[in-house]
Image (tube, rainbow, N blue to C red; front, side):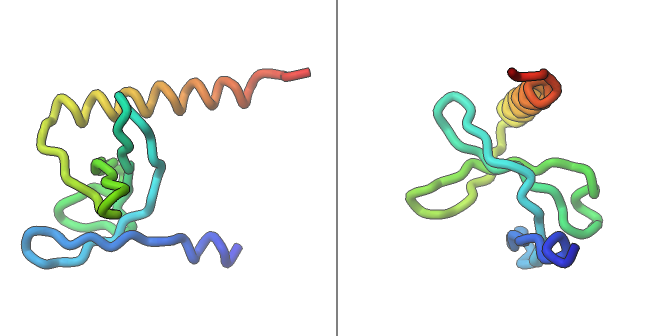
Length: 96
């Protein structure tokens, strides 16, 4: 039970220099690029508790890059949901 409380938090700094803590939901690869899907670790005025925030993962620089293209963000989220649904379906099937 204690391990659940010690979830790893990712600290990001917004444009105003304020630290926002996130929980890592998942990392997914879409069209050959890796993206991180994050959830706010604590409620705040800018991000809803259940809102998924997506960043491009730059593995060479070990950094997260913001994505400005709303259409791309929606594509990535839709892709992630399809993948998650497919995995969930695999978990429900009986494999002999």
